[in-house]
Image (cartoon, rainbow, N blue to C red; front, top):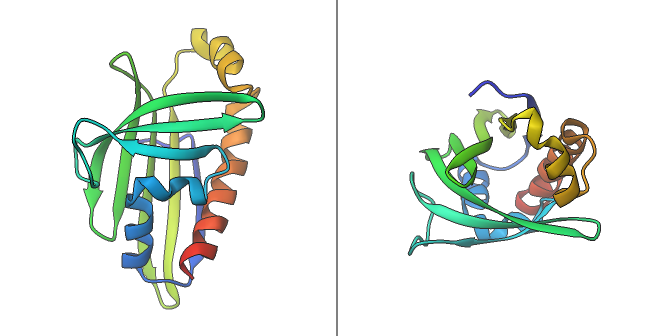
Length: 151
């Protein structure tokens, strides 16, 4: 993955605690300012490579859902997933966890794979004018909220 954005934060918690929180996708709404709920699909009930889930998002009065597939999972180190629309991967997200003396450093990654021709439609659906600025702010808030939840 070649991220368009990456945001890091030191968290005073074990890599295991952070990984467990991040990979319980039903909890993402506790820290994400945009994603408010997730649910497993197709019989999945835990994070594993290939597992699918539906994410429910909101921005102001706009709401939409996305389908995601876990693409990489390394215990206490990495959790990456693709966002999919009609078999097209339009975004990649991920988290890397590195141990530190005081806990761990968590880095959140985002890669936008939407064709430019879809930007206007995306703005209409989400109400987000500048996805890069919006996501950077959201990633900072997500990591701050995650830290508050696990520290």
